Amino acid sequence: MNVLWITSAYPSEEQPGSGVFHETQVQALRRLGMNITVICPVPQNPAMLQYLKKTYRSRCDIPPVYQRNGVTVYRPHYLALPGQLRWSQPDQRIAAAVLDVMDRSGLMPDVLHAHFAMPSGGAARIVAEKKQLPWLLTLHGSDVNVYPHFSKSAMRAFVQTIGAADEVLSVGESLREKTREMTGRDSVVLPIGIDLSRFKEPKKDKLAIRRKLGLPLDKKMMVFVGRLTEAKGIFELLQAIERLPDETACVFVGDGPSAEKIKAHSEFNRRIFAPGQMENERVKDYLSASDLFVLPSHTEGMPTVVIEALALKIPAVCTEVGSLPELFGNYRDLLVEPKSVDSLTQRILDYLYRELPVQEIGRDLRRQVELHYDAGQNAAALREAYHHVLDRALLIV
Image 1 (cartoon, rainbow, N blue to C red):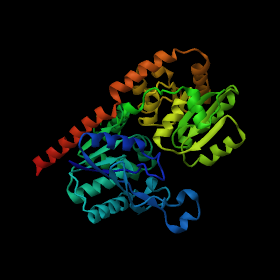
Image 2: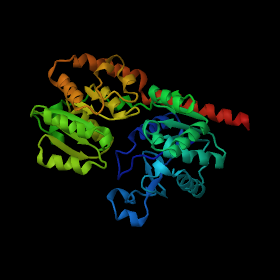
Image 3: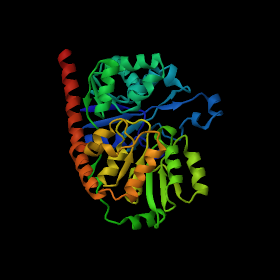
Image 4: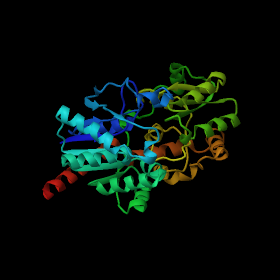
């Protein structure tokens, strides 16, 4: 079966940390014999706007097509305008870019699979109608919790996209419930998961890994991994660090609009490190080198990096948002209140100094990951979903 993925994030040599969870799922599907092609359109702002702000500059360093681990990835540009998801969805422009790639490259998929209702889902709806193809939509978090609430027009676009998909999947139960409340349509819960074979306890000890990474050997190390934005809670984490003992330090792995502010902190504070964005294999090293993983997001779907940390049995301090209570199961009480520096600081101290049963918690949460968040197991379920929508489409014809 030939499947075309349409998504707004996928790793490249220039941006190795972008959409790693997508690549994990694609590779799991390939191991099951599926042929996956990816189209990941790149927003390009008008030239006059690119001079006004760094974030408006197009990512023109990413090639228009490349091979990555056996998968062909197309990166066509489309015209983007600041704040477009608030007032004018770019569905038509993204769809035009996707259709142009399909026509020029002779792509003839059996099924479309869009990731994120906005903006990729809206574009996939147009492409599926134009090409008369069955399509699935996976909801990941911000496309349910954030973007539809920007405006009435954004909500209309969200509801229209959810209603048009042949099958809707959610990466967590909370997204399923919220989508049902907003649209009246149910979805199937199917997390993406991780490649468990890559996330086992490291053979080297923490100190050896820290030497390799150039991190302090005499600190209690925390690590944050994610997009460096206010919504990820990084400024609450910075405030918490100020309240923690001097023997604690934190690594901020990632890139984003607030990267310069984090780097500025790291230049004068020897307890803060900012190595930037990197390949997932190196991210795993930073996780393994740490005593604690921290992700104090204001909103989430099901962040893959938390699953990775738990698979490595790294204690994790996270906020009680999105589908994280499902992931933590019996330990959901350890989740903290979002936007609360007090709650965040206290839970970090609990893990580092209050003698929580860290080993027992680590074993139990690793077992939870093995049961529900194995990318190979979940890819098999996704393959069945592809066959289901294709068979149903053939019956209608």
